[in-house]
Image 1 (tube, rainbow, N blue to C red):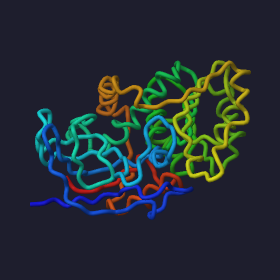
Image 2: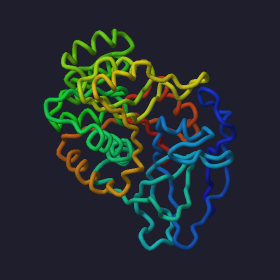
Image 3: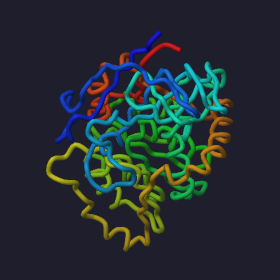
Length: 336
């Protein structure tokens, strides 16, 4: 029986917010695997802010998606057919599957996952790339010490929630910025953050100063823009800033707004370092074991925002940029 594959292929470089017309939704037969290949049925896809950057032409940490190519996305799926020695039909796997119903892959970067240890969507968030980003960004670059203050923007998102929980495990005081009372309550009441700031309704600069009377030792930045500029005014001496993302800037049509308060880095002998998770690929397994232990023991909690239907991809992706998602945004493509 021929399997039909549905794919979103990039049709145009988006200007501002992504539109459905920036993609072609195509149907074609799924490609049978050749030697050392596997055919994977996509079950869940990870929707991440970085996807917006991948659509732009130009130099970056990863080549852009080319026009006509299947839109890049991480996912989890089930092996349907295998001609690869490391995988068999029925295996559940995680890797770069693309925004499509079926993926034919050579096995590189494909890892088996166990749905009995954690639900499959968790492998796209807390135990996936967002979790790895949080782990290495905070611990390798932020180097938090017990008693220090860690501030996180986009704190209710896939990366931010994990950063805060790890910081608490390391004995830090944690302050998160998020949009709306529901998200802020989740940070403090469920995840154990010491404080949360609602950037939509509070004076961020004033409240940040109240919650961080001795300054900010570590700032994990997921949003850039005005929030980054405000935090720069509150740094402690020797502070470390991790630049993970700048979601407030990704859809700008007038260029990225840089920080005007950057001289605070000089005054406070602070550092600002860019972080790309792919640089730590050779250590994923070790981090995964430690984080899996925290998850299994209940020290690391996970929340997913799951939307059903591959065909909803363009509109669902936009939830990331309006702040509608609550937790890791995941697109359900099919049942396992």
